[in-house]
Length: 432
Image (cartoon, rainbow, N blue to C red; front, side, top):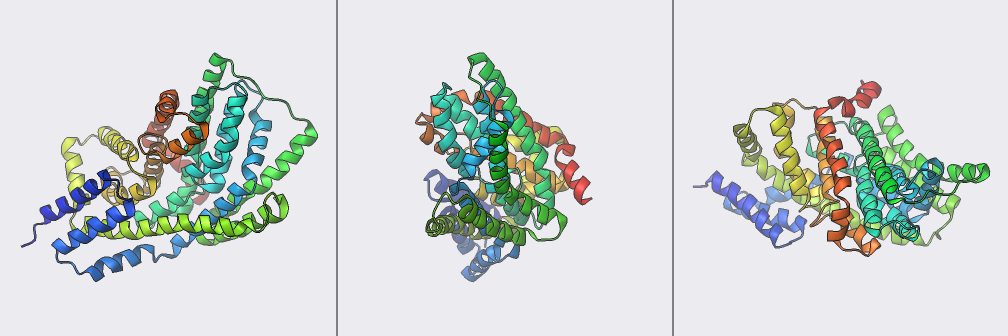
């Protein structure tokens, strides 16, 4: 006779064991699901069907277009233009390059939706530039890495599409709008702490541009930024679906990069397609494996058990939300964002949304911000690894310098968790 408690132990225990062995997350999810299905006498065809159903969704078509558009713009000179544009706006204050770094990441996040892409594109220019101007290397890496976290919550973000699917059809348009104020607030908080540090360490101000130079730089940068306007405007206006907006933005990015900016030859497009395809293959295989894993979680009633377990600790809403934030930040330090969205959403959604009454939109932004912070933390923060590689410093040194930046990120996270209006104001204003 099948023991459901033992089956739950097999599913979660095997998953944790393989994760400790550093088995790739896709294979970890798939293998633990298959072994558990064998124990439960569930036909393998049912597991395969769940995997196919996980990726057989029209809304997921937006992801390859988002990835391709971000890849085109990141390789086509947009990062340099955004840095120059940000320099015009805010470079004249104390520690101007740090402020420019944050603002450029804010703009770039609205195009790529990826923290790692942000660090790779903005960081390769900003970190050497800041070091050359006398900024400490650990601070240059720290502000680049933490500001890149804006990319996962400032719209558009393909991680929000993954959450919308995992949560069972949450409005992508409302999610996009819900991430706007928290993303900008995160940027402002990092600018404030950067200014304090820059004043203390006497970091320099930047040069002043002439009016003619400012107008030319602004025109070039705004052409690239219009990619995000197409996506967000199309979705919230109802003219396009998220998939259609992403496809049109992809075409626009292609035209701007290869026929307006013309910094790279058309022959580079094959390499861009190859890079995008590799990323897409990882994302889609991950979604397929996580779909089977999530179905088994529901079959074994693990979300309900998790809800009961949390409520036995405390029924106080504040305490539960703090515990959930601590849990998500802890998980974010050892796993990447996309798998965690797919795994934790079906488990925590009943607790946070059904039991505690939080809006699915607010929970989505809170979840993604939590996991975004995980991208910047050791031991497996991918954005942190990339930043340290570019800055040629150790993870330990960078992490120590980032402690005040982490503090600002946590403050913003708590505001998002306990002040619903920060997330819900713009979605309610625009979409009712």
